[in-house]
Picture 1 (cartoon, rainbow, N blue to C red):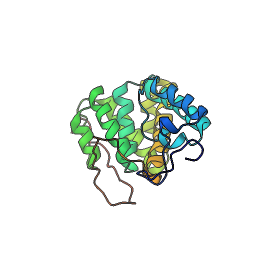
Picture 2 (picture 1 turned 90 degrees about the vertical axis):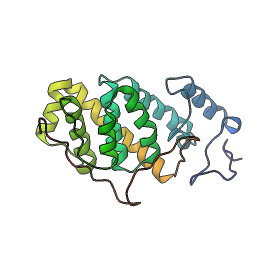
Picture 3 (picture 1 turned 120 degrees about the horizontal axis):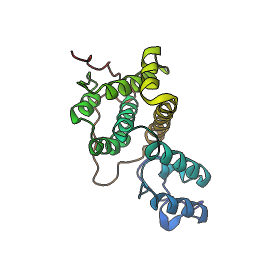
Length: 210
């Protein structure tokens, strides 16, 4: 054991602190995480706990962006799925595909994103606008004026700020999961098609009333 971490062989590229081996600072953050809305330690926070201060700030920011924005959960989860798909993050997709389904996102939309085909939002203008904003920012690093204006018109400036932050935060999550090879939880499976190391390219959505 080193610095509160069990250094025995573990899946992934690094070891992950376990409750029985955590030092005091790690244990304090761990208890905050599992007693909050997440209820479990999973994903990037397993790696972040190597630095308890980082893990603490991370989980606080993540709690705000996942549970406390003005955006409906269905739409936040849609933006997260676009982000996960861009970065081919298997774990991020596996967790949030389920969350998106429970929040009411059309399964056909999620499947279209998974296989990088144009999603058909039908009469769901809100979903189409969120998808286009998220798609553009993860693929180009920016958003065109019309797509930006659509989000501000519907959700206000605070919504535009929150949406951008959600996408940026889950890009951080995806990169952490990918680079450290953080494994899927037991009993969870995921299969995102595509070649390793090649970023996913998502097309624009089916036009309204097409």
